[in-house]
Length: 412
Image 1 (cartoon, rainbow, N blue to C red):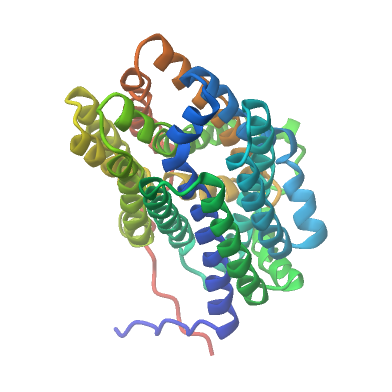
Image 2: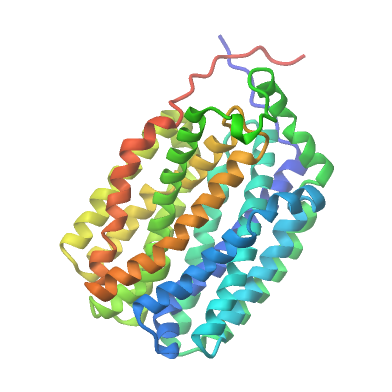
């Protein structure tokens, strides 16, 4: 029996997908460019690992303090405006952090980075989910893949600038220019506010089973348990990324005695392999289901980083971060998608709560790893990454199995 032809994607949806991809890409550039310069920033400020970890926590404090305003801003102005405008604001705040003359101003600038990055994160994922619904197939992992390749580009720029002795502020000026130009191009491509709102009509079908406007206090405990498990899975992906962005260059230089150029490649390997994993992620999820993909990813993180830390060497560490990058590739987008589809939560609530809790976890990660590093070594602090890989294997059962699609008659 012949299969039904795949419906052609409307041109305005293709443009919207490209626009969202540009925002994710520039978001990755900003973080990616920061990671290789962390050792230099720490040296210029004259601070310890622990103090750096506390200053880095200001990023998460900013996200936690004001990040939940993202939903109200999106409802008022639309996710397209919020994502593009706050993306430019985030790059400007990163420039302020790179130019900060002392740790107090550095922390204050990172607070602003956290606020704007949280708004960008919710807005770009919300818009991406709206485009995905209209596409009627999984494309969210590809957006996160563009974030990863943006981070690789940013990491390469940072590594080259560090190797050439170009000052941190000048590099971040370049990043700001790239972000402004890309988001000016992206904004006209995105869905209008009215079109994006129409995409949320799909939630009405769920309301027939479980009302989407159920008060939070009346949501079943089981639903909260699933949401917490999904959050831990997302945290596993987030902490692996944070280990690469905050600590990998310092670990490579300070404990493995690698040069600044080579040290950047641990982060680049993480993001490069994560990009590959996210480009393949949608097909892997469609074929095997998010549950199996997440469990396999958790195992790869645990084994890859575990071996790299057990037998430390520069190239082994690069390979370990690469394995972790591929392993966590689908964890955050998969957890976000599952949270957004949880019955009993009004549209966007599960995604917002998971994003907020993920930021809360980021608040604890840098100070904890920094404290462990000051007491023992960065190598010991980084063992948290394979531990979270094991947790993913245990908790992945809350994620969806493979969906067996049945053929539907073609529309008239």
